[in-house]
Image (cartoon, rainbow, N blue to C red; front, side, top):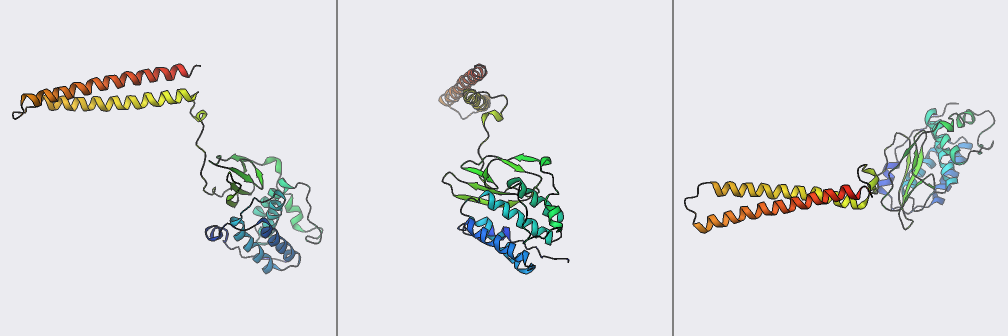
Length: 275
């Protein structure tokens, strides 16, 4: 029998419209309904249950337990199988196996010899690739209900961002080709700058760069003032010439002083990087 299931893009719409007040129990009930419909050959009921689950998932207000994440992956695998997308089905099944490697479909859901049983173990887990995710500025990332930052890139994952208070900020079902949902990321550590070894060195380096820029600006202003002083001003009084000369000299002195400070900061940056 060939089953055809119309895939409806509801997950993104749900993420935009939900209030973030749904529970893991809501997901569990919908997966129960989908499994029951699948076992009863009720394609329409199966699709409706998973459509609703796709709407509820982005609205979760609590972390999804790993066991429920595995059930959700299996349900998505069944959905992809019904939609005749065996590659995606196998990848969703692989995601479930990483959480519950000993699981086997009951015969009440899948009879012996069913094609899904072979598809369920088609993707070898030992060949899975990962990608390190940026740490959030606050809280932590949960991947299939477990804290971590190694996103699977060979099968899908349920990603959640939980803040410091334990509130879920983001929930998304991601295939490897899907972009990360937006979340505020932590600034890179000093180690991300290979030439910076200490915080003191970072401060002195910033001071040296800032001082050099300021000294250059002051010297440029002094040059402009000198040019104005040298220009013919037949209407200037002696006091105006003396004032312009004093301004020029003051800018030159200030530029030199700031330049000395910049050089000193640069030297301290070099020294502080050695100890």
